[in-house]
Length: 407
Image (cartoon, rainbow, N blue to C red):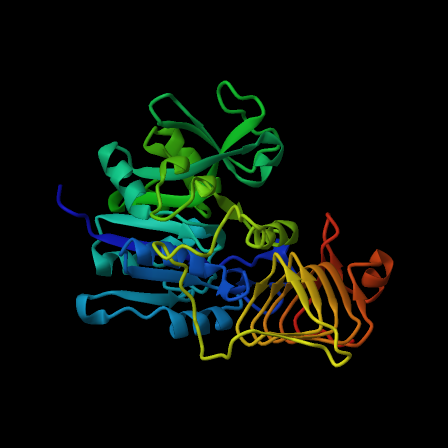
């Protein structure tokens, strides 16, 4: 079988309102994650490891830091025509922004026409997972269908946040319901629903026909809300079982790991997945690396505090150029260039460039970049005090201090 020509399209234009205030000043895919990384690094690393190296990233809202990160990090040799490039809303179809994921592709059909791919991989930009897209493409080619959708089972109580799939025994999608109030259960398992991961493999002709107004009824805005229900009706869509995807060097407990970090609580939980003694998702896989921008920085440092107190650190990620001076940190992530002075951190996600004063107590919180926390401050300890300061407090009590907050 001749290898197909692949174009990867990464959808990175959403506003990310549910992740506020972390998206006040940046696009959602540019939100820092796991200390050293940005959310978009995970999908781009999957493509890079698979040697799918013709990649366009469709951007729209607050994209400067995302553009800058990609330009600094994601450079392939162009000798063989490889590239990663960001593409803002070009308004080729008129003076209007993207109205959804399908419209974003429609407004950028010139990219497909220029590249002449056989297959287009349309993937989301802000999920945490490892996946070999070659295996999904191989499945797509072996089974006739215009589009293949990667899917995982989730508890039915949580499925309303996703596109929910109904499929027959042969994997043909017979129904697709975008964020339904009453998600249909999986056959034989009334407590679980099969949901879309937001990763699609399209035959080029099917994709172009699907996003072009007039070729299907109406004008499609979103892939999940508009395209997939129609393709399901036509029985031209198939489901790909993500749990079958095999990654070199991956432990069995990681098989099928995928996290949507669309809310503060989900973002916080996914970060904490990294710090467990035996993490359910490990960053330490040399066979399928997560790549990112790595500027020259000194090593992390643990030192006695000015009072002579020794630092105590457990189940915590310490990033380069971070300094813990006589501090106690457990179940936390300390971002690059952060200084912590005899403080107590319990389940704290600290983004780059934060300064934490002496006697500070941080519990179940996310501290965005460039925040200076004065001596003796407590965050995540007293909900009323956190709300009085104007901090965001999630449904499950995670406190977020926005970028550059001044006490």
